[in-house]
Image (cartoon, rainbow, N blue to C red; front, side, top):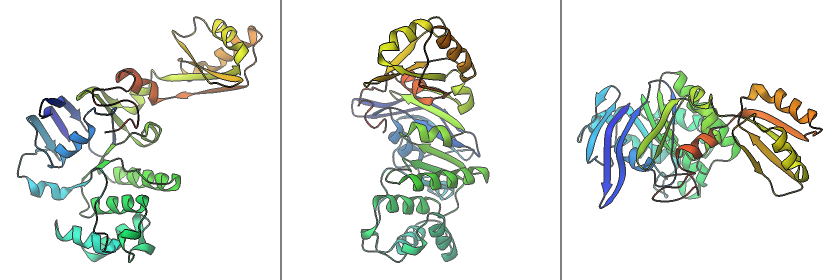
Length: 311
């Protein structure tokens, strides 16, 4: 899947300003951006709900144009909150969705209800479903035609922790089976453990794209926890080891974040010990959040702020 020079305006407001995406086949692609960056507009364009003002879209190796409805039979999508007939059961809703698209067997519907954990509630009216159950039913609906490409907008919305883990495992299995899974999400930590490739947009433009491993290479951190009264001494002891050391925490202890490779945690600890400072906590790892904040100007955009980091 790819887009080239994709532009879309709503009156005088420019939502997408020449968006270029390159999504490899058979991966989970994490699509990230702050409020108002153009993520949902992109999803609507990819599913034919909107038409671009300029630029091109390629789905499954072929150009996607106005009127290519049959191409969408090979694309499953969940954009924003799923809508269902509240007076019908979960199974009946899936049958209604199936009737509007490519032919789907009854066995396929039962298989998907089992996959998303709704087999026992399949006969219940959707009006009695929780938000998380409706979201899982929406994912089942997106998978009805066994699509090669799956487009999901905030798929973890409304799911409890166990549901998020189950959803993650399902999407990873789909990618391993050769399907392309395109996920728009505001859950940075979840995307970090889910995605193979990341695309970050801000103000309607792509600001970074690449494999998660490559993007995180320079995002290693070592975090040190010390007493608040030792914060200045700790910063001085680590002076020169990193260009910037951030301090966070409002209690008797604070965390200092040192932007160095996790493998240098022992060096950080040694410097502290030499200065007579003994940390009560030390963590090392990589984090997508600093990169996101750096590339998106702290998460603010023309349409919103870091609140929700979505849409």
